[in-house]
Length: 183
Image (cartoon, rainbow, N blue to C red):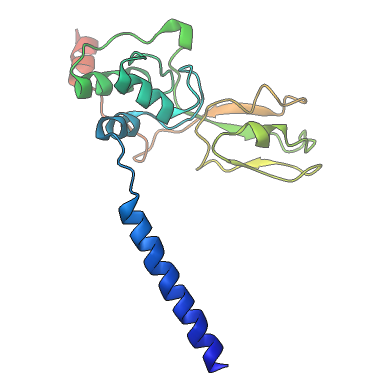
C-alpha cells in the first residue's frame, strides 16, 4: 500500500514538473493590444460585428481589417473607449450592424418551454440550463443579452428584459456626452 502511494506521488511530481517546463518552454505570447481591445468589448459573443466573437473582432481591429464601430452591444461607450485606446476619432455606430440597445437578459416563459434544447445549442456562453424534453431556464448572471437564443425557439417562449441599472452595471457618462446633453 505504501509503495503504491509513493509510486503515485512520484508519477504526480514528474508529471507536474514536465507540465511546468512545457508551460514555460512553449508559452505563446499574445498581442497586448488585442488583449486591451478585447477587454473593452462587452463579451456578448453575439456575432453582430460580423465575427464569431469578441476575440476575433479584437484581432481584426488590431490588424486594421475591421473598424471600431461595429459593436451594437457596446454602443457609443465602447466606440469611444476603443478610439481613445487606438488614437482614432470616434465614429457613429455602423447602422448595418444594428442599433444600440440598453443591456438586457433573456427570460424563458417556463410554462411554454417544450425542452427542445435548440436555445441551449445557440447560446454562446452556456447561460441556459435544462435537459431534453424538460423545462429550460436562463442563468441571468451569465446571460450576455446576445439574443441568439430567440430565433431557434419553435414556441417563442424566450423574450428579452432590460437589466435594471444598479451599482454593478452603471456607467459614468463621457464628459463630452454630458456637456452635449446640457447644451
